[in-house]
Image 1 (cartoon, helix red, strand yellow):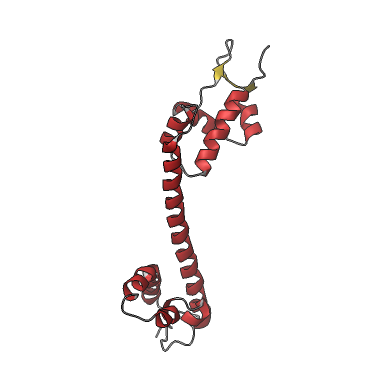
Image 2 (image 1 turned 90 degrees about the vertical axis):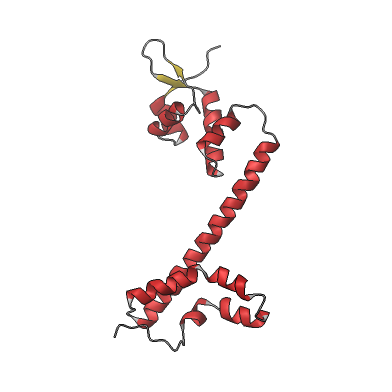
Length: 172
């Protein structure tokens, strides 16, 4: 019984992965498609689709290709894979926290710009820099400030942080 094979272009269209990516995965030893005896062209089958699905899934989890290669070469995933997933989970949580901080900084900055219309660029970038380090400042203040004061200072809504200030951010 002969298995159904696909050319690289058909396989790429079928899987939604670019031809260049398929070639790259082959270069990196992640994929090993068969070759047509007559033309030498790459031919992909069902097993290649399964392998590609594994690669894409692990890429989605954020694993680097080097680690993916070692995992797909073994038939069973062990405790090492679990540890890798836990490490990746930690990295992704840290990245999410960084993104959340950046999003809040953007929201607060656009709010300030809307309220003030014009802000000195040096002062604006200084404020954004302060927003970046706000979490560390809160952690340092915890032992010496009451919780309600910390909350008012650091957990205020964007509109509360940017409004009613005694600062005039406009250019002079």
